[in-house]
Image (cartoon, rainbow, N blue to C red; front, side, top):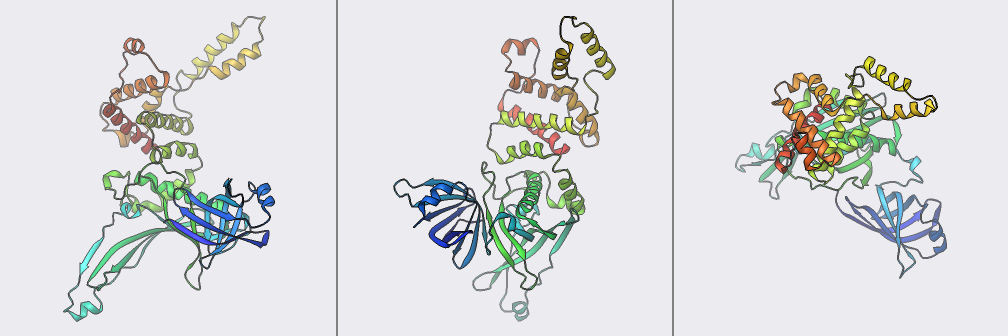
Length: 433
């Protein structure tokens, strides 16, 4: 998505006769920003500036709907100019409110998809002396389509086409792959539902590529008669932290499309089915990929994800103390509460503070046991687990030098040691997810 500027006329859905000139600007990181020149009824705009959600417009001979408009500022020197931030721009149609925006299908192109399918650009030079080559130099192979049915209403196609661009004098041709996603619905859905599914799809690709992923091109509602998309959409990026790599190597990615091609439909289906259960873990995980945070915080975040995943998906794993023994100890404490004290208060305190959850080390041991077929050749597991636990405790509990020496902690202090420890721990999280 490129930077755009639209100069045109704008109005509110319920005040069609009052039209205002203004300029709309869009950038992927900031989203849309529209400045309106209010010629009349300034009092109304002052009173309602924070309750305006939809603004309609006509610019460059295009119908435009601006969704989720938020008043940014008013010019103090010129009170007739109002500035609104815009989260989503829809070109091609006017919608009176967000509930009226219905989507049947859409075309989505993300950055780095070419890297994910390991495509290279080829340049072919033609010999003009051979007439047959000039007439039909080569044949473009048909598109490959990988279909995944998510539920009764939603299906997602991953399409890999082949594009060709000739040089100015047609002496050279550049051939490259053109991958994109098609999202299709049997019955039209709301714009919010569409964006939820796109977010899930975007995070799936991001998980595989391990690099920030953004929408590059976004069109919706393809007509059967013309074969063209009716709407063109521009949205604000949700995360803008890290710099995006233009060229990724296979070693940069957790997996490329070639690795999952044969089971792509099943893998994508499982990702969508488990997405809601993993939502809180995804927030932490993708904050590392999209964010720009200290290595120490990345390490602590990965540990938190690992503990949360184990707690959520393996609740019946071996507790810290065997359950019968834990119950016995708890009953002994309750029996010894003096009679003059209210037992109900102590019971509440015990239930809140006395838990039988596995320690971080026990959780790590369970992960290694659970995924033994993948981690069978992991070197020095015992040392690794001790260093992870000691390093986490040092960072979380702010231990001093005497405590570290007394407990014989093995801590990854140097940057390169902590980075290697972080990568190994993140590998466990990747396997879990």
